Length: 171
Image 1: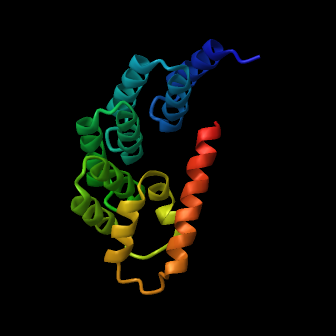
Image 2: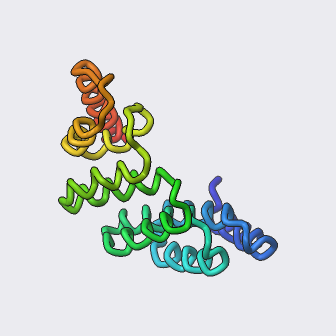
Image 3: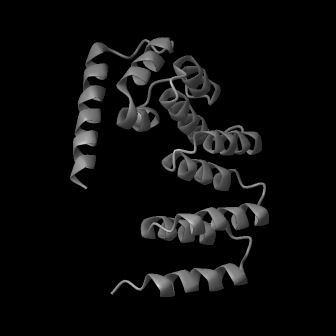
């Protein structure tokens, strides 16, 4: 039996004992998100960031959440803060480039991707883009100097993307 209220109370107790341990906030936020308790998620992020204002991970996760809420300006600010705190955090650059793409700022998206040091082809690095937009993926791939990418690779990528999108629709 799932007792969400008891789980939230347990997180609150853990946070009281270790208020600077960001993992507790992260897990509590995930549970609150699953329960659709949006206002509590926002408050939890505010508390977590107040306690750990130098946590790039918190700003990154906050940005992901804000993007889901379609608060794109806030998400962009959170991503920028995460990058300021940790300039080598490639996942933030990837997420920011996806957001820029969503906003129709393709050239900025490609530049952001490169700024994040994501300059060569790897399936892991492009997986998230495969889930969102084949056009931005194509533009990024064409802009890279990695000549090992073949038409067969691009075809495989498009097939994987289609499989991923189709599977996502099942859940």
